[in-house]
Length: 192
Image (cartoon, rainbow, N blue to C red):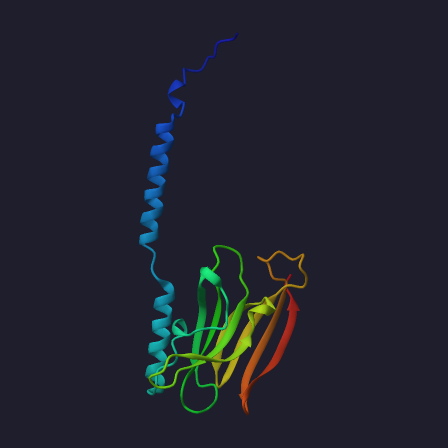
């Protein structure tokens, strides 16, 4: 057997106590980082609500987090991914458009787009579904301007496309006409 010219490295053998100490230290760092994270969703919603209340001076818009959605998420719960207030029917009172999906630990769950109203003293309620989660779409770029709801809808051309990477994109706009929201589709394109 040949002897090594290198010094004895016996001190580099990791013992279980070393691994336990390392795992404990890493868990402490992760826990500390989790406690220091800001609650971005709450900050965004309150800033948005304040802006609309100040501009319109009337009743505040419906709070998207307080509504009951026609979305069965079981024990996982639901997440309001985005909400935008605005007067959609021209009555001077604000409605709220919300993008909602079932909470998921990972992946891209399908989203629904709902219009909410909140009569004085009542709980917010869903009055229209613009995008049903059964359509398996992801909704981005949600805006409300001059009574128009606009969004970009991301989807999949086949079941072979990974759920992380939608390959279809469509711009859609909804407008209240008569007694319903009418959708006009914009350009559809495939992602590169």
